[in-house]
Length: 198
Image (cartoon, rainbow, N blue to C red):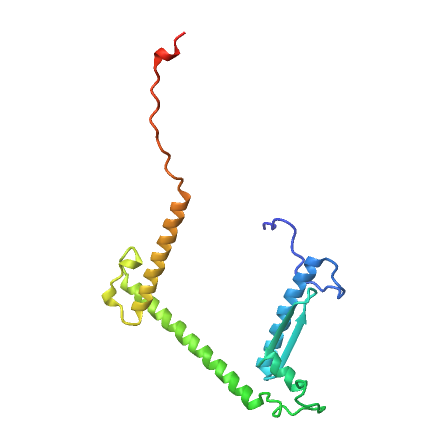
């Protein structure tokens, strides 16, 4: 059995929970743990249908927030805006916060949007397959049989041609700017041998 090069990894270990002194390690830990915290908040909201708001401030004073349905909606539910009312337990419906029915409608709209995105991705995949069939046996994709393409594929094919044209133009400009200007070849002056006599 071959031993791996270098020091073997220590793997995942328990660490002592205390302030991190090294500023770079502290920043990396903040970023990773913040991402994990937001992921857990998202999972809690998705699995339990809970309204969640998480706000984290970095040492530099930058604010990072995650909210489902939004941070503002969750905060307004428990702390009304100044001047709206000062009751100890504000009524969510009176504050204009979304209720369970509205949250359900928002989630349903999000699911419909995800379904539309998936359908568009599937359509684009089909277009790519048709273009691949149209160029079967050809060395380059721009040699594809345009007659075999339908109305849905032609705009995508035209965009591909435009991207190719722009790429060729950029490459030509790069080559032109990288090429040094041609040197002028001046004829060598004729020397008169009699001028240099002793």
